[in-house]
Length: 111
Length: 111
Image (cartoon, rainbow over all chains, first blue to last red):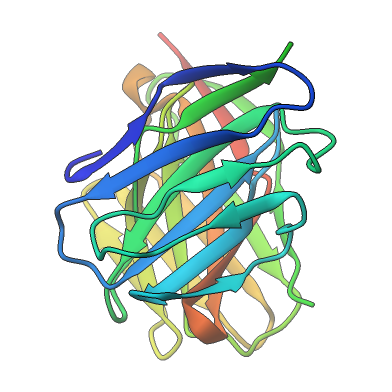
């Protein structure tokens, strides 16, 4: 947690809807990351951004989109193209060679 | 493609026991290896970070070793306590500040 907030904590989506998960940080870190975690599994990288107005796809970017208009914010949109979006989503920040710092997560459930 | 494996997937021990968690990775071209702790439904907390040039790191009752040439790391927990119960995740950093995670070891320390 610390200086990283994610909202909402729980999110429910109907099939066919787009939803946006918020991630805000006050650590002044350049890099921000989005991960997905499925039950009993490790984290998989969705998107990451190393600087404002720039971002790269991770290992599982299909069905997701991001923006990085401000250093403090890195919202993730889960689109209707993501066929199995139910998961725990974690945002992280990093600076240089330091470790990554994680937010508390958002649990997304498709109804 | 980098792959990270953690053994065992789950471990249950009595309080006070010393224990070892194992992590292996397929590509030795890493910048560092990190161990994280995750409590149920929460984000990750960094425990130890070992740079690729280092052999081990220690923090309190935790000691992590790294053998880059063989693609292995161990996390040693001394005198385990019920409060140590959590999932422990190993991750390696490769190019672009990207982390690749293992699936974790779920540890239960019984009073």
